[in-house]
Image (cartoon, rainbow, N blue to C red):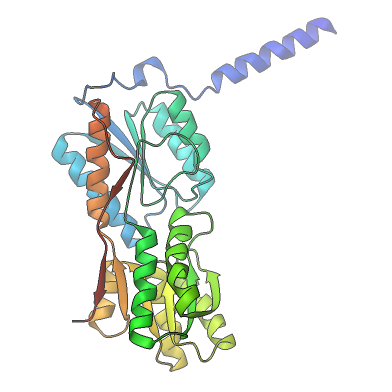
Length: 305
């Protein structure tokens, strides 16, 4: 019996050792300060969203300019897949991780794993709740939410009934854009309904159809991103109503919709710039330079000229 127990314990130890997340010797990142042959791992929450495609393009273009290799993985809005993807990037011996979290809480475990291995982490657009992040490169989401509410008050007056389409629950961008919006809306507007549509255009359409039925006299909609805003417009057009819709991101479809007189406005980010700034921050960290904990990219309210 004792021999059997000892055998099982030995097997468990072998299994645990084999499952270590530490990369093999050949794949371990080079010492800090060496940017030659530098390799960056980029984990994007989803490439099914034009905003994040532009963000990825900004990273890839800047990395190519700097002579840095980039390995890109798409989490497909699945937090478990993203964690596995980042583990794989660590195994490939990346020198730095650029992470656009699907879920700011769920990503914390792999951020801490990277910390334990000395791999610097930089987050893009959304933060991680725990772990040591060298820098967050993002727009001021709180300010953007405030800008949307202030424009509604300016155009429609105080007390206007509005609907809020929220992003993915748990994402820092969802919390921050919502906070900024409510900082103003709770004082000067009447938010009659709010519901998550997961930053998705089709869900934005379906959620908006349902909310319109229960709130026929609503005058404005704030969507936490352009994809949901564009979905909401489809639902509004089908209803025959005239409702202001403000999105967030400034993607090409949204800008074209504004020109066509459909989408009222968007709080435009600069996703390619976010990507560029993140690569530069990763390079600075690798060279031992200090970087700011928060690196902002400017926002702009875009309306039809």
